[in-house]
Length: 289
Image (cartoon, rainbow, N blue to C red):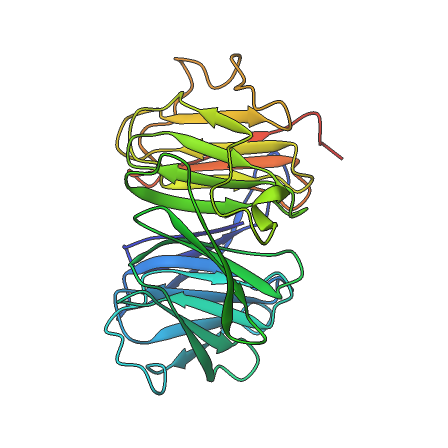
């Protein structure tokens, strides 16, 4: 498991379900980390922050490669990114509605995608051929990454200020989060060419503050949604029913203000991080190997 934060430290843990020992801790003196993710191969970690450069950490050798600012772009910060499931591309969130595509192999810039509004969220298709991004006004763009063009737009139902977007690993579900705490869940009909105003499959209104986190588990039967703005604001949703689980979390679950959450690759674990640097790891018995 990987953990990182604005203390400039990257930490790696070995998850055994009992002790979960920390196996490595790396301090980056010139980068307050705002986003860090494993490459799909598990051999590398991409690390970014409020700087124009980023790092690639090689897990096997324990070495860092410092990648200078992206050629052809004048980005002052690289606060977040999404790695394609195929492992070929890194999509950085740029300013002015730009999505910056970089090859994860060569670390070279390969193209830009331009939205009309600022980017609030991005998510890849399972094969890495398509990328969807949402603007704050609720307009969702579907990009053909190979052609570097937008092939469809659709609008989030009832959107006032959209704040997040996620798609499920099986490409069947698409979720949007809003400043008001409402999460709209759509199915694959949003991809139909003429469906520009799709109707949500489910509207989830159990949270009342801005949604920053939406995560699907590996088989797309669970969706976690969370808000950092209010303490203990996390809910687990069953799919395809769209019903929110009532038995967890409870009032006694020590979540705090959730900053991010993530399912493990096989969904046997679920990790929740908060703003005081605590990560709580939960075992999902239904998926335990």
